[in-house]
Length: 247
Image (tube, rainbow, N blue to C red):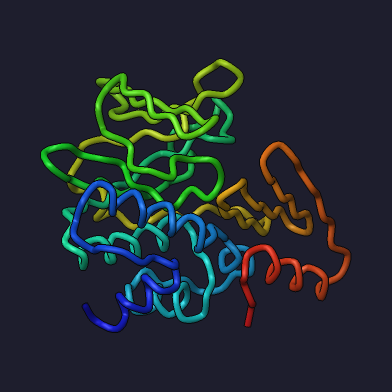
């Protein structure tokens, strides 16, 4: 194992056997989601973004930042391949918080990973940030996947391909869809033009979110909201809740 892989595993606080298994895949995905936030600060602050592995590694592991779905899943796919997993990167259309009238070409693009193990394909995705599966989801039509109070299901549509739904108030809401097009990951990523500063990370008991100067801390059934009023307060809260230091 090279030094970078050791540094990556130490950063996400993983200890244990590295023999490829479904159990290991689930452990790595959960540890990753609890250690590395989704954040769009480089986009919001109009900084350059690179999708080269050395640059993403430097940003996320060395500088201890987060990233967008492309950065997070590209780096995570590199880790999984180095550990012996069979991984395919896929682009998806991300429908959460998108109005039904939104033209298809304006629906945000998302990247996810498909991992093949023992003849079954699983979605393993560390790039959503907010509520989303923390464990691999079998890519099987009609399969329902529960994690605590969260429930997801997989469906197949002849036009839209694979569809991952989340249950909301006893209704199913489409999270994202993707096709079996093996060439889709060769397309250039279309980054969200979101101008608001956003960060999200899962925790063992809830999640932390940030929308501009508002921070929300979900712990079990409780919610605490913090509003910062100065740049100094904002940077302190960013460090406290997401362990991010902007330089």
